[in-house]
Amino acid sequence: MTRIDAVTLRQLRTLRAVVETGSLTAAAGDLGLSPPAVHGQLRALEDMMAAPLVIRGEHGAFLPTDEGRAVLEAEAQIAVALDACARRVAALQSGHVGAVSLGVVSTGKYFAPRLVAEVRRALPEVEVTLRIGNRDAVIAWLTSRALDLAIMGRPPRAPAVTAEPIG
Image 1 (tube, rainbow, N blue to C red):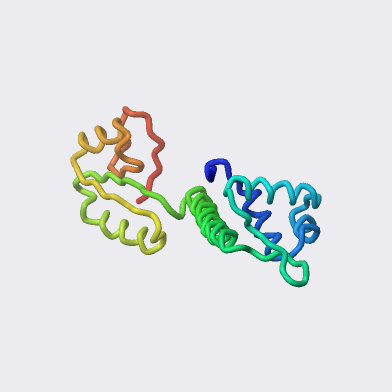
Image 2 (image 1 turned 45 degrees about the horizontal axis):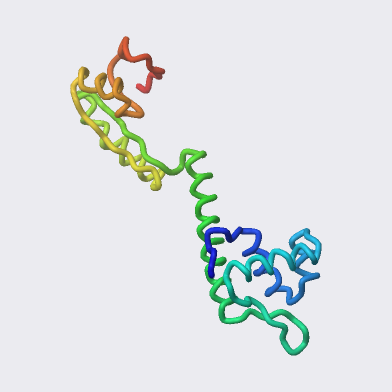
């Protein structure tokens, strides 16, 4: 019986290393584990999959079975997904991807679209939403946290904001 929910990344990486190196000892060296630990990881993965994942070839090297190849394909997809996730997290932390909601008082409607276009050119992975309204509407959006940034003539008394002159 397959217990896919118990499979670990370490087990998947162990299978990949055993197949790529052809031996438990070489895989252990690559992974920084002992050969018995590699064997244990591989055995546990085979038990969870309820199938043999490697067989010994003619020259003693470990080769993947059809089931092993299926697991290796999944491992490759997981590795790609995790790499993309790491890049996305780094981009979010650096501010180069995400979403920003910008509120502008009515008098700013003449220059705000150009500002949004410049931000989109400079940071194409950042989605900018532009909301235009009168001063009371922009303050209400700030109060309800519907905006990340606001452009207005003078900062409101409430809610508390950090104000920076821009022009």
